[in-house]
View 1 (cartoon, rainbow, N blue to C red):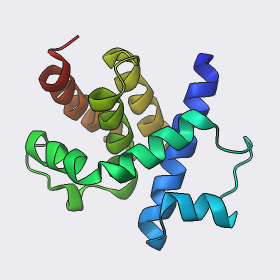
View 2 (view 1 turned 45 degrees about the horizontal axis):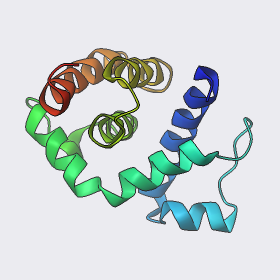
View 3 (view 1 turned 180 degrees about the vertical axis):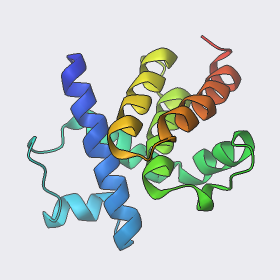
Length: 138
């Protein structure tokens, strides 16, 4: 899958997870009900894998995020940052075909667009620690 397509998939997964957290409705239900729409089109297979993968492994992912993010609980993280971190952490922990550098860079780029002023630095630091722990720094 071309880089641009995967970037779009990650953006859409972020949007789905954001909607899930705000509404309390599962990703599958959001997709089935047709309440999700994006100008880039329908979510593809990679987007669905990311969003449902995060949802299925959210306790494990949040536990890891809580361990590595100094002075921040997962609940205290800004909503967008939290879900960007969840997507990338899922990739680092469960998708061996995605290089660590790609997962981290994509998350940082999403944080620059959708996060706050310091989001990209925060995301980069947290994911660097997770990559080191999960993949030995690959």
